[in-house]
Image (cartoon, rainbow, N blue to C red; front, side, top):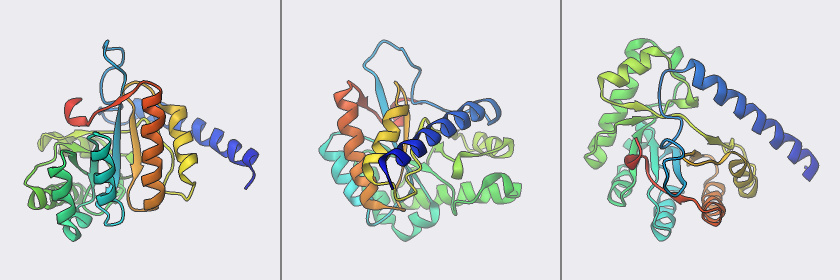
Amino acid sequence: MSDHKNDFIDDYIHAKMAMLTWLGKRILPQGHWAGHLENDETKPRLYLTYDDGPHPETTPQLIELLAKENISATFFLIGSHVEKHPELVKQLAEAGHVIANHTQHHEFMPMLTSHRIETEIEKANQAIFDACGQKPNLFRAPYGVLDARVADCLKEHEMQPVYWSCVSEDWLPLGHNRVVSRIARKVHDGALIVLHEKWFPHQTLEATRGVIKFAREAGYSFESLRTAV
């Protein structure tokens, strides 16, 4: 595909995500769209978040890379994956990363019954607790969408919904340079950067390296959501 066509597609994705974010902030239940309030007179900060793990081809290498860079990230884990790879969840917790809930089976929450919503949240919480002894207090809905029933369930479990700032659509085989470029266009103080573990492990790892490099050159530091919400 030509660079010109790639640029056109990236412009379209940028505009689409800007519109979805604008719309989401107005119609979705209250939650975190950024890691902290902007302009709080400290060094600008970003928040690396990873969805859909743990994954044996991605998680161990992310742990190693983030340790080398002295960065704590936030991992939104799928309960059924946790049950398959509990040792990876334990390693994430021991490395100091925040462990969060991304449901048990990654289904579109507004289409579920209230009972299924509760089950999806509770089973993932239990799987995570069994793996690392932690009860998650952060939740990101599959596809980023939740309704009032999900928000009520989260409140009952003393959990908070987390949304997004920078989404590159890295579940597609874009190549890590385009992933980084798309994120760079949306980055701002407090931004929640969303990357995915399971689709293209090499792309995710190299995109993480690229994001860290450009962000630090631009004067940003990184924090986990534990210190922000």
